[in-house]
Length: 355
Image 1 (spheres, rainbow, N blue to C red):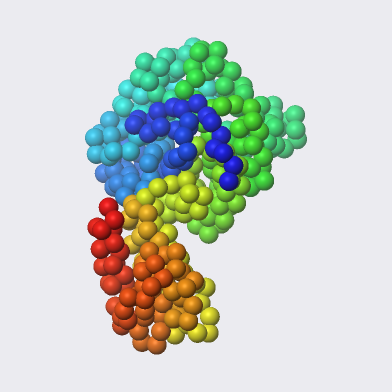
Image 2: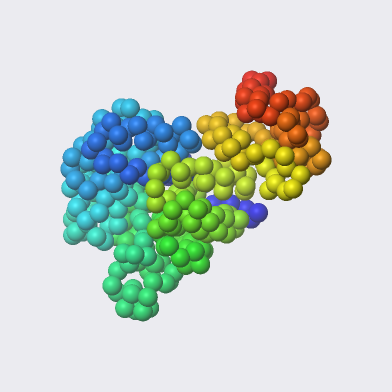
């Protein structure tokens, strides 16, 4: 994999974005932000899964004010997502937001942009400029005839010019498209043009399977080039579904620490037990663990231990029983109905011994 692109670091709360080898996982709540109890609950769920920064939609003053109370109940830094009304940005900053997501060119006059920028400077908050293909300015659409990577870059430059003229440099950039080739191309252009940290994502990516495929293709293509400092896997559905996908993408590029890896075979005619329920339960269980461990669940005892010898712990199924192994070495036989509890016990023991 290519050397990571060196970008200008910014701080979102206590989380650094850019200037390092780590890629930060973000998500966005789908609750009404002013519904404090529901928003806090979802934030806690996301944080338990491994989300590091959370973004809130702020369409009203009530939503902005709610940040103050929510911040008391969660540990993740909060990004306030603002469109059109600079008063919402100011209210969110006052309530304790850790970063603001705006496009300076669409919140009004230069004096309003200055007001928001000054508030961010006083509170040491970064601004994320987000360019979306679905809301690209008319001038770029007329120039190119349709959404293009070049048009998205020109749009970003226009917004950047406003902030840079105000000597504001704590900036993160994102370029969201639902088209994978467009997403890859625009981030490549951005990485070559600026040293601001880049937030990766494919917007309007669809339900879980579609989103996982699009996100893996786009983000994987960029991450392997060393591009990207933070990311979000956007899913039409529960935000909690986003985090395991994001972690698995990063884990496959060795860009995240303290994340389990589940190895399982595709099954064949030798498989003599129902693997799928076991895989599903163990996958959910491993999503709650924040330590690196490789766990293998194999279909048969013929090749299981050998194929998964790199795993720390695993099982290979047989007839009415399974072989438990560590590092490819068979430890003992266990009844099939005990596979899940025995695996969990072995994993817990392994973690205690190695932490």
